[in-house]
Image (tube, rainbow, N blue to C red; front, side):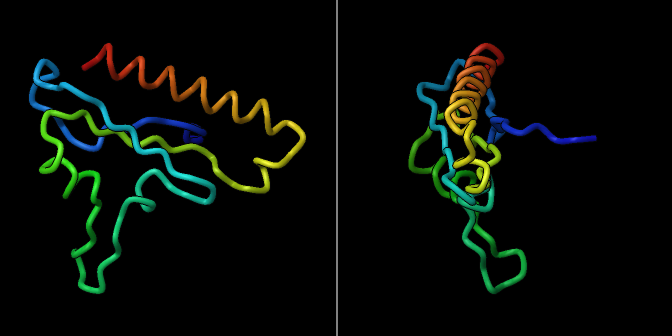
Amino acid sequence: MSRPVACARSVLEQESPLTLIRSIVAVHGLKGNAFRTWTHKSTTPGGDVFWLRDLLPAEVPNARILTYGYDSDPGKVFESASTNMVHHHATTLVAELHYFRRVG
């Protein structure tokens, strides 16, 4: 089974969509990852901090926090079809955000 090229994922399980007053979408850069980019690796086992989940909710309560992952291989970005690829990622991001707003 292949995994999707691009996908938005909720970082937290929210209690009620009615209490959400803002959305935060974290988008990584080239060679990034939807989760590793936002994680501080600890030298202590189990001490990693995924700051979108572990720190940000305390600072921004009532927020829907999403991370968006996509294929960010720089070799592919600079291919001749790079404009179409960027447009595809943008379209997919908008579609995913629309889905999360509808679902709550």
